[in-house]
Image 1 (cartoon, rainbow, N blue to C red):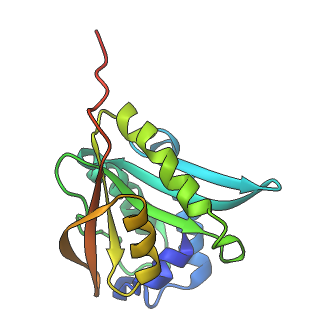
Image 2 (cartoon, helix red, strand yellow; image 1 turned 180 degrees about the vertical axis):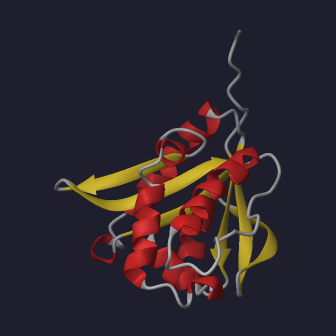
Length: 178
């Protein structure tokens, strides 16, 4: 996940030492909110090691999820002020916030496997669309998402980068009987 923050080149993180950022990210992923509460973390393993991760949530839970990082950065002396993220989701979607594969394991289909797993979680959360943002400067990821059926629905500025917003329709949301 640290790789994603590096690629985003967020100006708010320029002066934050890498180990301190990693400590905040690690603490976030240990919270119930990130693991199985408001959000879902899916991991890919090889030989007992995590080699990939997908992290997402229903768009209406974005504030709850983002509040975790805001609270953790408020407690860290490495941050001048709490980190507050811009909204990234579109209404009515399960948002894939992050997808990362270890550099040593890229090109082996792990990203595709993680993407194939996501509809189960989106439908569990009663969503019929998965959305994500991909940096204009990341054509490799763009090709992967297009091959998986995602379509560009707009553009968005996040931090200092332009992103394509993409969506995949996965069918009717799951209805849970009372």
